[in-house]
Length: 307
Image 1 (spheres, rainbow, N blue to C red):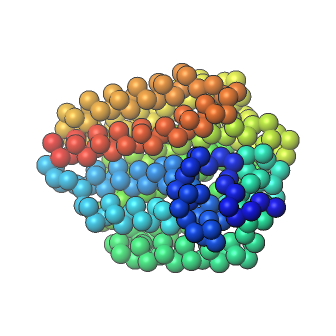
Image 2 (cartoon, rainbow, N blue to C red):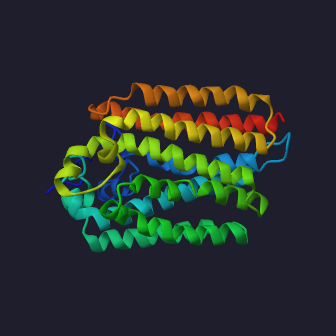
Image 3 (spheres, helix red, strand yellow):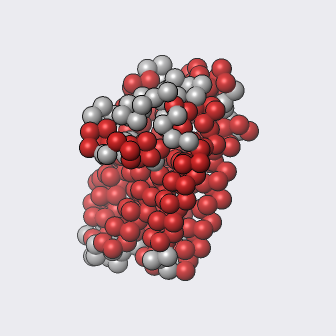
């Protein structure tokens, strides 16, 4: 059994949970992936894209919404990870990278994890109720995507697609919260985000390719294998096209197009340079997608402010 002061195998060394959090809270914070914030960024950034997109030309996005969605992303990513780990705890115990997680290692019991899930979900509900009717309805609808995702690896080779549906839902919600509607530009951001997630999560899944094959878990990494780089180029080309069309539909200023070149360069770096047989390289390139998302956020923010 893992002690509560032992960290999780794939958490960054010296993360704030291991260094500063009170020992009794550490297993719960690890269950919510607070020691690995990259997932929160990847959930939050599509929300911020669409909030920035919804700003009036010549204006900055609604700061209150940016903060609310940031808090909501922390809570709902934590709740989603807790639910995922409850569903996958038997699988996680058989995979080298995940067996040190709180549930399979015994740091928390399933009952404690369910209680933590309810607590985080109530916090997420409190944030959701601060938004308008359409955003609330979309938030409720997203629960179906969150609920089905952990089971997709059992029945399809494309669980990454279903992760994309769930993780980029904020591209619709953010615009709905800011404008009370969902524009075509927001839909294009959502579609581009799904393709983006297909790329980065396929890279991520290559870390567990061998263990997944042994236990019968399906993934796009196992399906694509040596063809991964070619498929990544396709995923990222489609994502870039959708982002460009969103900028055109949203009548962005010139700074959007300049910074979109940076997004394209980042996509090229990921797809052309990833070593799918090197787990450390896969993890590093996966984590680098926070920077890509921030570049796109800056592109939309400045493109709208300087329109």
